[in-house]
Length: 122
Image (cartoon, rainbow, N blue to C red; front, top):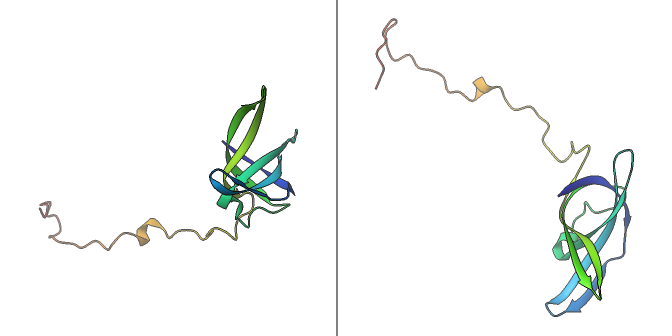
């Protein structure tokens, strides 16, 4: 799934040790666009939290998965982000120059026969 919005808050990074070693988690609050804005907390685990795009005020597109788990009879849902890209005006991040016209890619044609000669060269 993907969603676009503005990061309104960066929560403090959490770290700890588990059975698989050291872990880190960066949570951000994203406010969606549109008439009825929603706030959603996204979790970035491990190396995915190491991006300069994650900063307050940035407009981003987040790709994520939803995961629910049960603990003591209650269900908890987490939005786990696995990719983040800048959204909106990204002219500084992409090449906006127009590609050359098609004729610039075509090699010059050689005339291999006489005028009016319809024989194919193969």
